Image (cartoon, rainbow, N blue to C red; front, top):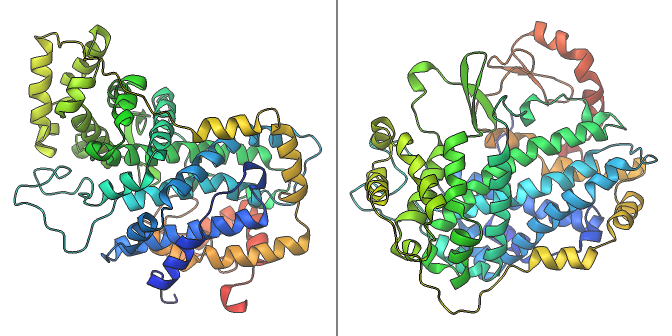
Length: 477
């Protein structure tokens, strides 16, 4: 395998950050918008490679200094609205038979790219930063890392300015979707989808399934981002805390996630948990182990319930109190051993059980409200079908030559060597799930543990393989 390309140089990263700009919802999928998507993807991969290599995270500093955090939040919400308002119209159009659904998939994936980039910059750790001898919040008793300590989130929250309210609302919408999920069966994952969609000209139904998969994974990223925001409540606008506590009642929503845990389920008598983009069977001896997602929920609850300012503002009425007290059943010795800070939560709940907190004092303030979501909806209200038809004509019905040109750009952006370096686990066989050492020699996209598995999967894999094999390699460009 060729050497894996490293992160961008500081000059390259700064040029990409400077080039980031907002776009109109009508222009989504167009050539200018696709360039913006490429910038986000390259910065996304750069941030992850830098973090995994233990390098100083220059990206956060660049996004803050060039005031691009509000731009990213605006684009995130714009694509979210597109997905809810325009994408369903595209799926209903009877005469829309695209040659390839990949251009639409790129738009759907854009939301995942931005929330992942935001998670990466919130996940920031400055080189040389020191922590006190006592383990910081986010570490368990054995020293196993649950989530990176944060030292620059305050700057990010301040840089977001009023758009942090829009990001909080976005996270609330995603957490509500998580809480509403049925836990009867595990959700599909991107790794478990068929390989045919990109090759099937009329696979809009398959694209809807992929959108469902991405929605679940995006919601989990939003959970991480929200937890990082709660780490720095003091740096948020005045209205942000009231919005989190009373408008959205995030403490009770987080209790729902603890209670129903959508990233965990029982199937055929086996416990499965969702981690690193896929569902894993958990051995009996590890079933009490806290996952990173569990840790994010508990840390967010600690931040929102134990802060004196939060306790002063939160309306702890009869319903809220009864919901919070449900947490006591989950605060076992095994859990507290993994996250010792939960002892404080246990004490707080014991006190809450025997007292009736005074109602919060009503402060006479002018409350800020998020504006991005409402602005985009008002600007495009009643135009969703027209926007969909415009995008069918100008973005999602490329000619063969345009598809080839775009394929070259995608081949440059989505380098297989970089994607493999970002993968959290070793490759798995597409057929049986065993650890794989070989992959398809034509498209180099699917992995197999043996020749037998490759032959078994060939009829399903062939259409996608034929398409991918036509894409020139970066070296040929």
